[in-house]
Every structure is written in C-alpha cells, then in structure tokens.
Length: 489
Image 1: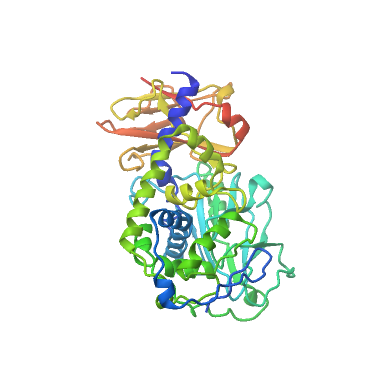
Image 2: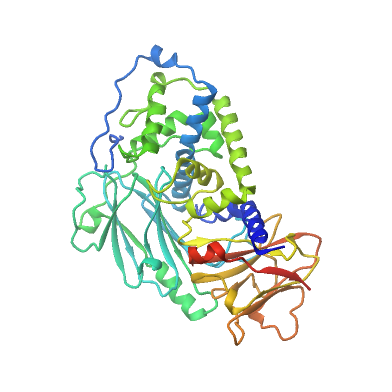
C-alpha cells in the first residue's frame, strides 16, 4: 500500500475514535440584551400575538435548517453547564493533577499527554480574573469557549506564553459595570463571546521526569479565580440569581424537550456579530418562532414545536454527519478547519465539530493520526508489532508527540504492572544514536529493547488501537508526511 493510500485510511480510522478523544474534558465535567461584537444592542423583534406565533408551520427544510444551526448551542449548553456542575459550580476551577491508569473506565481513550485545569465562568455581573502561573512545561494552552462553540486559544506556549505568571481578565459585552478598559495589576484582557464560558488549560506534565512532574502539578494547583470585585478588595457579587433551563442527558433530549427555552437562554447570553452570516441567519431562523435576543422566554409566546419530530431530525443529522468520518477528502478539510474562532469556520464544520465532539483544539495545537499495519488492517492483540521511525521520518511536531495503546472496543489502556501506556517524551522514550526509534507492542519485552520503548500487551482475540498524537504540528509538513506503520513480528 502506498503512502497516499495509507494516509487516507488513517484519516478514516481516526474518525472512529475522534469523538471519544474529545470527551476527556467532559468527564471533569435576569437576562441582558443581545449585542453585536462592538457591544451595541441588537434590536429584539416586536412581541407577537400568541395566536399569530402558534400558527407558524415548519416545513421539513425549515426544521432541518433549525437543527443544523442550533446544534452548536445545544451541544455547548450541555457541555458547559454539565462541566460547571461537575467541578462545583460557576466561577470555579478544578485542576486534575492525577495521571490515569488502566483502572479508569469512565473515559474512553484517555491519555496522559496533558492534564487539565477546567474553569467555568459566569461573566454576567463581574469580570473574572484568572491568575495563571508559569509552567515548567513544553506544552500548555488555554482554550475559551461559549455556547456558540467558536473556539479561542488566547494563550499557548506556541505563542510564547506561560513562561511567567499572568493575570487575565475575562469579560463579555454584557458584563455589568465594566467598560473593557485596563485594570491595574491585570496583564491582559479577553472578551468572551458569551456570559457562560469554559476556560480549559491543557498542560503537558512531563510524566517521565518525576521531579518536573511534581513541579508542574504543584503549579497547576496554584491557579486562582477571582472576580474583579474581589480583586479590587470587595466582596464577590452573588451569581445564584438565575435559573437555567434543564440540561439534557443527550443533545437529542434538548431538541425534543426544551429547544426554544435553551435557545432563548443562549441568545440572551451570547454576543452576536451583525456582520457574521452564521449569526444573522440563525437569528433570522428563530425570529418567526418567537425567540430573539433580549426576550424573556414565555412558552405562551413561542411556537409549540413537535419535539419528537425535532429529535428524529437531530438523530438523522447526527448519523449523516458521522458518516462523513469515512470520507478521507472531507476529513482532510475538517482536521485543519475545526475548532476555530468566529469568522474563521463555516457552518458545515461548525455543525460537524458539535456532533463529533465539543471542546476540541484546532489543528495548530494538536492532530491525532492513527497507526495501521503495513497492509492497512487493524491491529490485533493476537500478534506482536514493531513501529519503526527513522530519524528523517519522525512526526512533524513542534512541541512533542506520543504513541498510546488502547483496546479498540472499549478505548481503555491495556492493563500491565508497569502502568506503561504510551511512548514519547512525556511517557518516556529512548531514541537510537541516529535519532530514530522502534516502538514494540508485545506480550514480552524483546531482548535489547529499552523499557521506555515497550508497550506491554495482553494476548487475546481482540483489536487494539495505537493513536499518535502530535502537539503543535507543522501543518505544511503534515500535509505530505505519512504516519509510520506497524509491522507484525
């Protein structure tokens, strides 16, 4: 099989695990007027008589348009609100400093390449200041995401950040009592696109270096969140003055049970851009239903939706979007075009990323090719393998790379007494004299193979996955680079 064919298959098989990779973060895991990006008020439509609103009938095309344009908000409403519940509430940070092992069964395809600090911010009444420490790590990034699922990376080692402590003030266009001006003692400002946002810091822990690992996990625990009122010597303003619409066990539940209520809430806490086509077409689709920025949700003043019809449409669209994961050409576009800020992503990929798995990073931060055998077949635990990478074909990663081994069916680490699940700078590796490496996946460590380069395997009749993660990839080189293959021993 030639390199091009192998790379196409790698794209395809990657999709079978991508949605699970995105779930790592999730497992931790009075309304103001709408505004445009300049902070000016978006006019709400005049109130409609209930009989007029209720008379609106939706065609199949209108319903599909609504579902596709709503998916990002439904998905991120569930993600951010569940995340806040899991870490103890809004305006809370949770540093997860524990390396995972094969006993972890809650999350599929977990990895130890990065540990997470998950913060969930309520920006309605006060800006929030994140006091972020310096990190003794090769790779750190800060990602901020609101209900609109436009992804922003305001800080990253790729950008020269995290080498010294920083205080970042985060606010929205609706944050009360703050005009966006400088604050003494604050190093940088960030305007979020919503009032309820997640701020996730990923940190490479350098797990193969115990002393450095200890320093980094201590640094993670020094993260501090304060409101501007507290930072200025006052008391925090109460944030328990709001009632959230019910979250869904799945996104389909919201489409079926309370779509208009959730969308009205999201509209009232999201900044819309008057010049952004995606934003404006979304607002135009909802206005006839009685939902618009700045309105209070009133079930008697909105269209009565057929929830089951919306659920069925959402399930069908989910299936159609997931089918695209088998399209190598589409994935080549998606892998470098997802998880971007407003204005840099189209509706097709915004929908796709919201279905595939929210809280992903853009390709500038990380990509995840999958390893195949030389003939393109899946790997099996009934065989041992070696992955050979000469120095001139090492992954084009600007920060670091890793191989991680899983069982395919469950996405869990392979149990072993060494608790060795990955090979790389973080998990441990040993290059040869020329700078290349051979990674062995085997029941017994072959003679002469360094412990660092051995991924222990339990013999059995089951498939296994090896995921290659590249952090801060050189995307130009990545276009022509092919992942190595696994050779059966």
